[in-house]
Image (cartoon, rainbow, N blue to C red; front, side, top):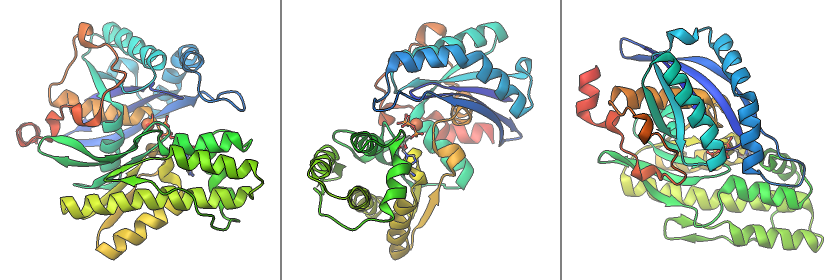
Amino acid sequence: MLCLGIESTAHTFGVGFVSERKGKSEILGGHKEMYVPPKGSGIHPREAADHHAELCADVLQRALENANVRLDDVNVVAYSQGPGLPPCLRVGATFARMLAARLKKPLVGANHCIAHIEIGKLTTGAEDAVVVYVSGGNTQVIAYAEGRYRIFGETEDVAIGNALDTFARAAGLQEPGGPKIEALAKGGAYIELPYVVKGMDLSFAGLITEAEKRLKRGARLEDLCFSLQETCFAMLTEVTERALAHTGKNEVLLTGGVASNRRLIEMLQTMCGERGATLRVVERAYSGDNGVMIAYAGLLAYKARQILKPKNSKIIQMWRTDEVECGWLSEKAKSEHD
Ligand code: ATP
Ligand code: FE2
């Protein structure tokens, strides 16, 4: 069983391959290209979509070569159906429909956020973790309960990666801002910034506005970078700890682009260590957006018979993690395929 996955929710256009034999999934590889907005501006959805449309055939070709597979051997075509930026999502969906029609193979729509979680479980061995999903477009603390991934806490406004990128732009740093802030933070000292946790939810907008104000008034950039990280990550760690306490789980799975930040890993590690929980961090190749995760999520959905007819294959711009039916997680679906 060979599944082709297409990622196209925002900056990244990726194609990846996952195969399954005797119930064991194997990542075969793929290729991705990233749209980089002009300096000083955020992502422009239509320009990103043009980038994806221009490159999709080349990305497919290189993915086939890297994974060492033939297009004719593909059994299932999966694509990121949402959530994401509509112009970008449409490019991926159209490409997927075209490939499925040409190959005469089933089409499966994957939820992008669930794909991050499932590839994280596959690559780290996490079984029943509290998931900390932190990226440019999402900030959610998630845990599985009764057939679905439930959101225990999330941002009330911007996502953490977007918040860091916004501040980085204001400071004249190049996109993506997260890694630049991480590097500068190493030489910084602490300045108090708004720490906003409401119940289990988080808010980053006020924090960024305050940091930008301080920057204009002449605060050291290194100090602001350090303090931004300390504040955002402490907020996240607090909510994650409470999710662990509430659910009684003893594993944390960290994923999304911001998961590569060493300071965030360190803070979560300290908290997990104190609670006797295990922290699993998704490696960089699979924590950022990629086609392989869509192939794997597609494979799971296919096994749970969640196949789409073309008329149901419209993109879903807002598709919350807790709205997704995860048939593959139910005991029935599991035992049928073991
Ligand atoms: P999604 O569609 O899931 O929201 P995305 O399009 O934002 O994902 P990702 O690759 O998951 O793409 O995440 C990119 C984000 O990760 C950017 O905001 C970037 O600044 C941030 N990031 C990357 N590396 C680091 C780092 N070392 N520290 C902090 N943030 C980082
Ligand atoms: Fe993502």
